[in-house]
Image (cartoon, rainbow, N blue to C red; front, top):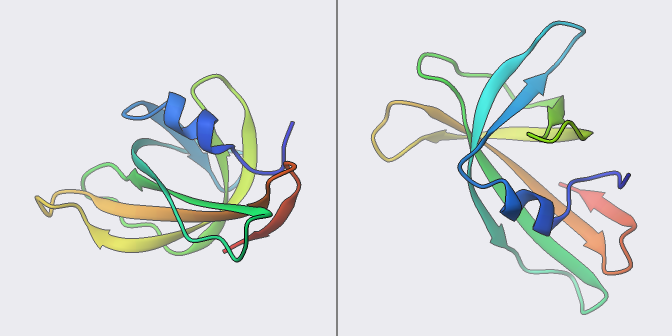
Length: 109
């Protein structure tokens, strides 16, 4: 398994529920709203980001969370709050990934 979810893995599960965990508990269901390409440092790297919506009334801080895909794969990722969604109902979290094109992790911002 890779150290971070791939762009294809994220894209395959758009608009689906993922699970966010920060301890041994059940965690929290979050929805993957968007996946977008970013600007890589050079042609050897791939940069992309994922935006997740938290349930209404929840506003988690920036933190290293355990992100679990709908298929059960898990990764440790840094998620950062980026404000509410367009309706103002749910708060959003974003992860930014910067990986070598050969699949090894360069950095996760």
